[in-house]
Length: 361
Ligand SMILES: *Cc1c(COP(=O)(O)O)cnc(C)c1O
Image: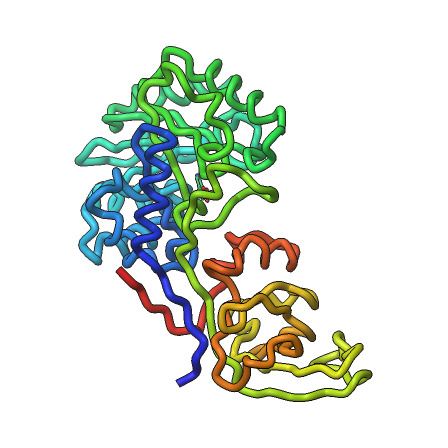
């Protein structure tokens, strides 16, 4: 059996969820969209079911996967519905839905419903992706109330730059939100992982009934580019690992792999690892990207190919055929691999495929 695999530590997932709750002191929907950022939505939801206040996914297809697996907790659709035909299954499966656009308001007004909806009404406080503009927000809220089809409204918005720890736009978005929603609703939801970890000063007093929306932090990766105290308490959930399946001794001057991107500058011992971009390892990872071989730090050399990649074993004489290689996990932070490859841990996790996944509880 090919040794490439992803181990998912569900105890670490629960640790990270508890940390989110401790930081926020409020209710938290665990964001498990995109198959729980590659960690397995059903397995992760089951592991959190006893303590999570609910879950958030991108679309109804993802929500139904959880319902079919027996998850009875609240589930929020972060993009709401894409066509009005989804309103019927939304009611039937008791899903909560984001309302972000005027056409969705119209669809709710036009559709006959048997049960009242729980809507999360989205304000565009500065992200400028979806949501009602501040000037239109009160009218949208009034229309939802007047439709007679909504039992409960949660005011929500999303930060664009909370991962930049000194960005003034965060306070501006918060002020927009407070102005647009003043006196309107009790329940509200603003904070994703970077806002929750990095911006406690904004949320200390009297903010009523808040729903947190942690995603990446549940999976143990920092959303920040630099060290951050709270993020340092997270435990990585996924270990992506494989083994050395071949070893080569190359004299100085010889290249390794496609395009000869790496050329040995000294006699070099090359380890071939069963892991490639078809498994989700980033093809753009440069020479020098960190890996760990039998628990010791080592470096990627040469271009990543579809099924294999190569590492430098010159300084690790004990390592050889069969040695365990960690691509990311407790020893090699996914965020460091991501930074080296010009991406973010979110994308690395979501891209994991083909490898066998196993869940440890
Ligand atoms: C994905 C998502 C989140 C979670 O974001 P993280 O940065 O992973 O914590 C929160 N809210 C919304 C609207 C999202 O789409």
